[in-house]
Amino acid sequence: MSHSVNPGPFADLLFAGLPDFEPGHVWLVGAGPGDRGLMTLHAVNALRQADVIVYDALIDEDSLAFAKPDVETEFAGKRGGRPSPKQNDITLRLIELAKQGKRVLRLKGGDPFIFGRGGEEALALVAADVPFRVVPGITAGIGGLCYAGIPATHRDINQSVTFLTGHDQTGSMPTALDWDAIAKGSQVIVMYMAMKHLESITEKLLKAGRPEDQGAAIVCNATTARQQVLISTLGKIAQEARESDLQPPALVVIGDVVKLHDGLDWLGVHQAGKKLNPDPLG
Ligand code: SAH
Image (cartoon, rainbow, N blue to C red; front, side, top):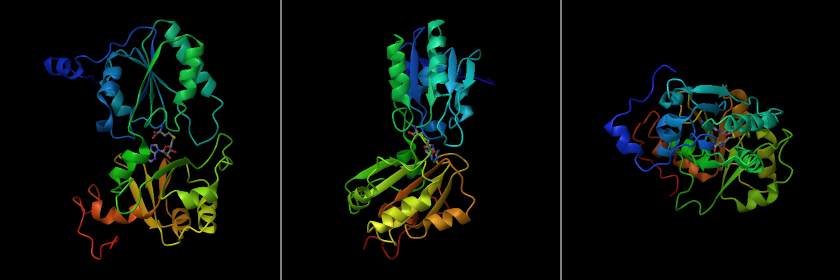
């Protein structure tokens, strides 16, 4: 580690009353979508006390700067969106480190319980009698959209939002999903890991009657310095994605909340957004 947070009166105040990380415990902690300013105080409190940090591919390594200078770090990344033969190894490793009496921080992107396998890891800890704690994080499907100037809900547009994953543990499109029902019943659909099957997914939604001109967007590397946003429509997004250089990690949003992007693009070219004329909702 290059540097660590300087403890002092401010840190004492900041972390007063937050839990002590006990030796032999594992904390499953969500680090948020990328920008380390989106970590919770509980996450930073975990980082500053951990003896060992087991972290994922989507973690911004800068956030490890909050850790103790002599912290051990282990990369447990899974890349390429494939089923990971290593998931079992990661869990066994957490148990092994905890049994050695270490304070084990399992740092995960976004929220540990949203498409993050946090539940599986926690159940394995229960089975092995390892005490644990779970710290929620801002999930990419909410925080990432916000940084792209797309609200997940907007009163005039939607009263519900659906989060789904674009592939299952075999790497295929999730067969358990009823795409017709989703097309009809989900006003706004926020999709994780959906780039690979985007073409088939959009086809299914269109076939089920979803309009071609409905707003659709892709947000890559959301909340990081490499964030890219593609604004399109349901009818065109698969082709535009194919012709672009956009790469995962990416979120796909289908719904007319996307049409607010120009007005709410606080981080993009307009900075404070711009007045929309004509009003896309009008
Ligand atoms: N637990 C995480 C999700 C892990 S699944 C969470 O709550 O956010 C990994 C998928 O999340 C990626 O394939 C992508 O679809 C999405 N994702 C995570 N971080 C992202 C980011 N910074 N930008 C865009 N998509 C992201």
